[in-house]
Image 1 (cartoon, one colour):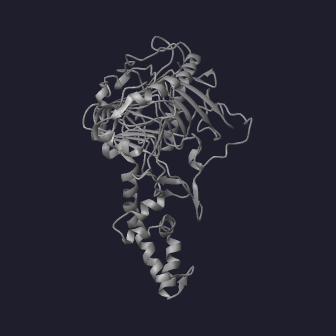
Image 2 (cartoon, rainbow, N blue to C red; image 1 turned 45 degrees about the horizontal axis):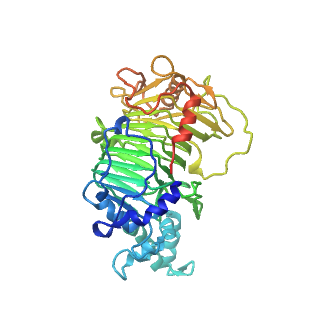
Image 3 (cartoon, rainbow, N blue to C red; image 1 turned 90 degrees about the vertical axis):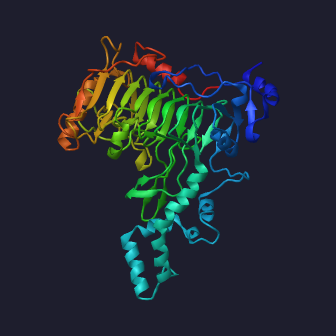
Length: 501
């Protein structure tokens, strides 16, 4: 009997009533081969006790199950939509506006387009002038319209909070959240781990919420959206494995909305963001697909005191498939970036030239993608980070397919007395082979030094604030696989990353 038949046969017997109307589950489970390892290797996840194992298939059940205060395992059956209301209907951006505040509240006059117009000083001056002249503006009473525009910025956080209450799902201690099969997905859901310990998230498509109310930063395409697929704050012992993180169920790029005079509205934030002293995390065998700023590990300078001495991460066996940046970006902590497969498209000229940076013409025209989807870099070495890189494989197409100058980037590296440290093991006793770009060996030490020199000359990094050294570094113990070639890494990642049955 195959898996599907077995599941159908046992399904009726497997599901019974549980706590608060939730359904406990003792039926077939996915065949997940991996065990915890690396910095998140001490995590144990939820209970294997059948009385504390649940199955959920809608947002109401998911929220109730996650809130249970005891050790538990939760299986996700099918696609759960973050905007599904308790009555089964689906909220839209207009729903969040219409349900903010009390009935009749003025905040329900919020309009996202008007919010954008309200930030345009030239537009506001025209409306103000029309109001002063007691004229109409675009068919409106200019005085009333100017007052309405003045409220938009204050109303935006209120309607944003209404959306956050719907699409945000908080996890509690000692929880395993697992997709029952390869169709299991959390669509438009922000999983939020705050001050919790011992969590597994496995075998799920994790689709970021599309922010109805992002704030613009710089024209035309830089925005500050609110939601990550997974956001972790001050949590510990977390393992995310065999997941697929992306912006829509299909995995394709999401085209921006365009608002006059040409804003390209990016409604997505990160996919996996961790800060405020989060510690002991393994992110393994995942696919990170078609996103622009994917993994942020470590907060800003103001959070340094909370992050330093913590923030230990293992990033292993993942497939970064057209992820434009932050693969990952690393601040303040200790990071192992081993045996990942990076696939990207680069149409930009090299930042600097080296023996590993060769320009050629494209075999096909440049990609027609949003501005925020254009490839920027893979590994961000920021503020006092301690980063160990080994056994990674790079595949790159585009007009400048063999350029290696964007593998690394530096930022906020201004303290030579407390430098970031980058260890690159490639060959010799600690690694059997060098990393490769498009099948050819590359010298990461030369590339990293070229990156350092470039950013020091540019004035955005201080001399001596990033050191190439392996002193005091150790290769992580308990890794699930050792490799002898780049081909083995690529084959392993393609076979092991992403959801399984």
